[in-house]
Amino acid sequence: MIRDSVVDCVGGTPLVRLARLFPEPGVEVIAKLEALNPSGDGSDRAARHIIEQGLRDGLFTADTRLVESVGGDAGVGIAMVARICGLRLTAVVDTTVPPADVAVMRLLGATVDTVPGDDDPAGNARRRIERVQEILRADPHSRWINQTGNALTADAHFRTTAREIADAVGDRLDVLVAAVRTGGTLTGSARRLRAEFPALSVVAVDMVGSTVFGGPPGTNRWRTAGGGPRPELLEPAGIDRVVHVTEAQTVDGCRRLLQAEAILAGPASGAVVAALDRILPLLTRPVRVAAVLPDRGDRHLHDIFAPTGPETPRPGRQNP
Image (cartoon, rainbow, N blue to C red; front, side, top):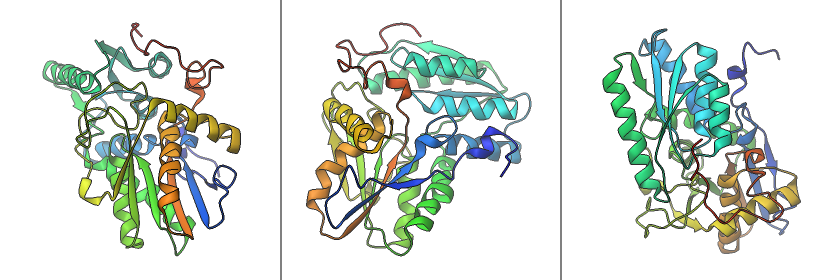
């Protein structure tokens, strides 16, 4: 099939059994490889849905400047869709956002607006949002994407990610495991899959040091599972279990996934693998688990996959 643009390639990502990583009899772990979206991240789905729906509804026009607070990979997908749709984008980042993500956003034509960042994810998110609000007040043509609060984020995963999983697994699915992130993948997928599989257990993966579920605040290099303020889209009542993973467990999960399955994935995916290590021994056999692996790992060759492991200083102390 020939597509009209790279945006039309969003979605339809493959599912693969992680039988080499989890070979125990009676256990079937099926991974949804969201890193195979065009920008390398599952957030491409929300970016496409929000922008295309905004254009259809007239909320976005040729004069619109899109604005978004970006903590990582999601900004690349938004920049990609904005470029294809002919819209301007200002991505508000803080100085902890990986330089590789910032560089790609700029290559795709985004204006990058940088605010100070430190080891407090909630504080970084607050400063980015404050800057977003300043831009919105100053430019009447600006519109906020707001992936963590936009209902279309969850709707994108309800319509596509969850449908693709349900179509692939057929008549049985016991557990869904997904990282918190914006809350969209977890919420949208859980809604649809629980409707189709009423006994489904939903597992949310978060980072040690995150306050999303009320835990004590702390520092964590890999904040892509969660870490900032609770996403507006997140529905805690629909979550059966929360698993918090450490920096070291996240790195180990990424490396084991690469070694066993030849899948080069990012920290949110590594966190999901680490969570699977924790929950699989607790599940009754036979069990079928769907795990969403949302991000790619090639932007982490310098830290997660470096021969000596991540460097001691935390990323982002430099200006992108």
